[in-house]
Image (cartoon, rainbow, N blue to C red):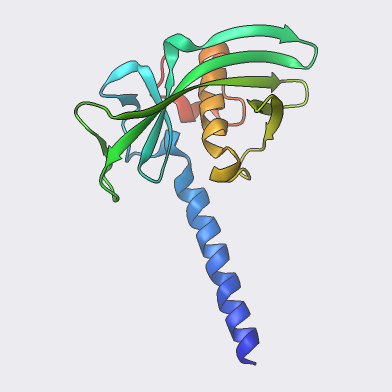
Length: 166
C-alpha cells in the first residue's frame, strides 16, 4: 500500500514538473526576458536555461544550400550569462558571452521537420518534446532563424515573433 502511494505521488510530481516546464519553456513568449540583447535588434533572444540566455545573431543567418532534403541555413548562437536565479532575469550591463557557436539547420518543409547538425549527424528537433539535453534551445533558435528568412514560424505560430521585425 505504501509503495502504491509513493508511486502515485511520484507520478503526480513528474506530471506537474512536465506541465511547469511546458508552460515556462517558451522563452520567445516569456515576458521575463527582453527580446533583444541590451536593446540591440541584431541579437534576438530565443531561449534561456540554468543562468544562460541564448541569442540568435540576426546578421549571421545565411542560407548555405538548397538540397532535395530541404534548406540548410547557418546561424551564430550566443550563450550569455544572466544575473540572478529568479525573475526578473537580467543580462549584465556588459554582457558576459560564455560561448558562441555556429549552428547548421536543415528545414524539411515538405515533411515539416527541423534538424540541426551535431557531430556531423543531422538530429531531428521535435517540437515540445526535445529536452534541454537533446536540443530544446536549438528548436527555439531554429524557429527564429526560419522566421527571419521566411517571415513565418516553422513549429511556432507567428504571434510568438511579434517583437521581431524583418
